[in-house]
Image 1 (tube, rainbow, N blue to C red):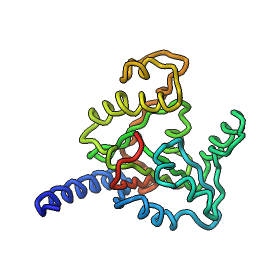
Image 2 (cartoon, helix red, strand yellow; image 1 turned 135 degrees about the vertical axis):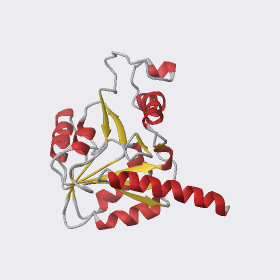
Image 3 (cartoon, rainbow, N blue to C red; image 1 turned 30 degrees about the vertical axis):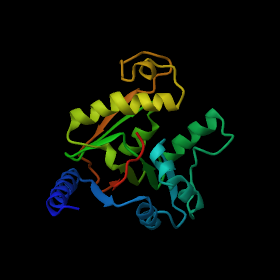
Length: 213
């Protein structure tokens, strides 16, 4: 890599790390999926209880499989054959987990996380409950500011997830958010996570790959 470009990239990384640190969140930057899975070894042990948020990133990186193979108590929302009631019970149990692993729809250079949720269980756990929260994002989820992050969520993440979940919403046809009142709407709770009262409870892990939507 060109030295000048490398210097610029490192300056941006340092700026983002400082922004999250100032907001009482820790930012860790890793090179790839393999490095991520090795990094998680320090958390996935000693029979800790683990909950997860709905996330394509966790599947793409192999994190779900790794949790299942680890010596932890996993509240596995993705088990086959679960009823709707059982899934809701897992959501509630996850709110009291030792460790909660999820992704974020977007983060910005100012040290904030942006998420939109249907049920609200994911953002609820990120805000309060689990002792430790790991937020895993790909480099494609990093935006300059709040406006860019929200634009991505409304016009990329939400419509794409609605398509993935076979939802009959206007955004699946228009390709962008129309602020609908559809019964299939998955955009119920819009949450910005900024300053945290418990220092480093939230750790944001940026993987230098494109992951999720």
